[in-house]
Image 1 (spheres, one colour):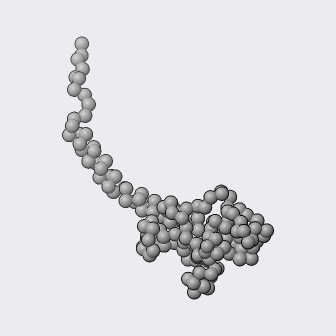
Image 2 (image 1 turned 30 degrees about the horizontal axis):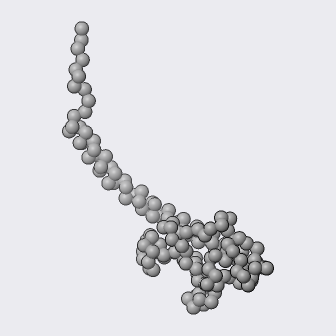
Amino acid sequence: MKRFNNNTGFTLMELLIVMVIIGLLVALVAPRFTSRIGEANVKTTKSQIELLSTALESYHLDLGEYPSSEQGLNALLKAPHSLSKKWKGPYLKKLNLPQDAWNRDFIYLGTEDQEVKAKGIDFILYSLGRDGKPGGEEENKDIFSYE
């Protein structure tokens, strides 16, 4: 009759080697995934700006003007009192304003704003990027509707 050895399994050294190899693989692969997440956040924010810009254009077609900076993007969801007869909204499917990929509100500047007038455009809609501060590069770069 044959006896089986009860010493089957992994040694501590073998487990440590496997853990080191897994750690090295994670260290090599993780930065690639995190850079992809950053790219995805920027693309998502640009898409949200496009969606809001389209809603602003629809608002403009109905009312003949863009919301003022004071009215802001909320004018897409609820009629401004002075224009309620012409207003045919809400101009967004969901009854709340989307946020950028970093869960911050978009910044809207209307036609009367000096920066908008200086650029000769109808409005400025933008996100401050990942860091939430003006300027920056890569993920931290501001994302504007006119770019």
